[in-house]
Image (tube, rainbow, N blue to C red):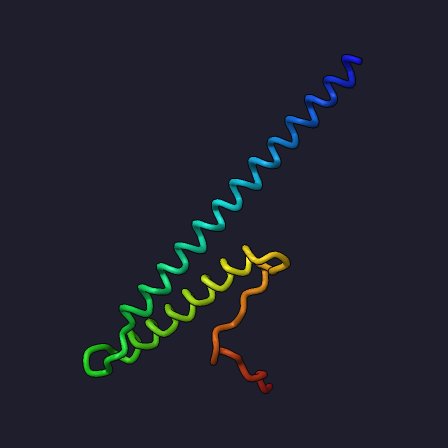
Length: 102
């Protein structure tokens, strides 16, 4: 009977540990999604678009930053969707690549 109680206590401890890990991961995902949204907002708000003020490279870097922030935000959102695959990042609109010709 004592072996059964010890096994039960061990199983309960493992279950509690897993529940704690899951809760921690969910909080981390929520923080990541929130941070991604803020980064996207800032990237759009401070995007360098004026060709008279910014160099061509700065404008391109700003566009890339916005695309990266969009992808991060979508990725963070996909991780919270039941059945969503956080390993597959949706591509931002207009970023599709044509097949390379050799």
